[in-house]
Image (tube, rainbow, N blue to C red; front, side, top):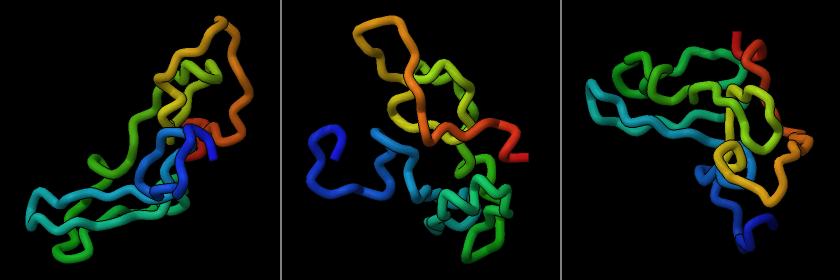
Length: 101
């Protein structure tokens, strides 16, 4: 496992995009968990208790990845990490911003 982890935490997102994202509702305080595939697919991200829209909180903002040099709409920790040389690397988990529309 990358980074020397023994067990993958689905909320971590350091070596790969996190499979799960959580968001605490500002209206009622309930924590709702969303799957990566639902976020990428552009699904409605609503609070499981009151139905408030949590898209702004749960959906990550696209970034220019320093690992691949590409814009990624669902970035992981590699997007902000530096490496020894100035070359970019292939990222098999890159999520282009167009995939979220």
